[in-house]
Amino acid sequence: MSLFNIFDISATSMEAQSVRLNTTASNLSNANNVSSSIDQTYRARHPVFSAELDRATANMNDSAAVGVKVVGVVESDKPLLIEYNPNHPMADDKGYIYKPNVNVVEEMANMISASRSYETGIQIADAAKKMMSRTLRLGQGT
Image (tube, rainbow, N blue to C red; front, side):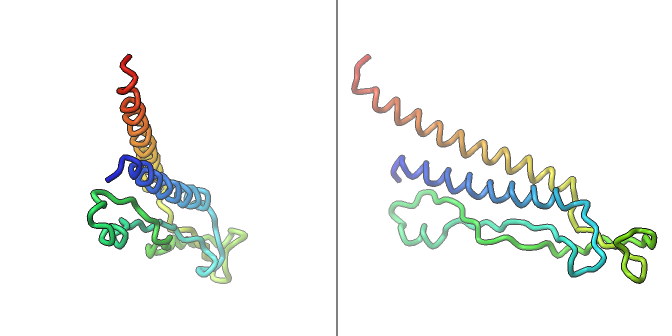
């Protein structure tokens, strides 16, 4: 594996964590939305990651490590929060309002985890850059 592959792998990691942060931000910003119908209610979204297995198996000789790929973003299957509140302006004809299935505590933990993973990707790329720089300085004889 070339040392340059480290930059590609850390870039895929940072890209995946960026998608994770964006979906978490979307979930948190819609956590308190209220709707008058089940169909229009926001549902929590989560990215699905996969290691690039196909690419790894195609290059078996040069695949000691592979990056991560965002396969898609799926909506949560958790039930929506239904609240009886007939005085609410968004209540349906039966007096119910519908709230998203977003758990703010879980989303905050997701945000912290994604942020730390993103930082790790940056640190890996920085360490590889320093290693390459020091390797180039070996020939200078300082």
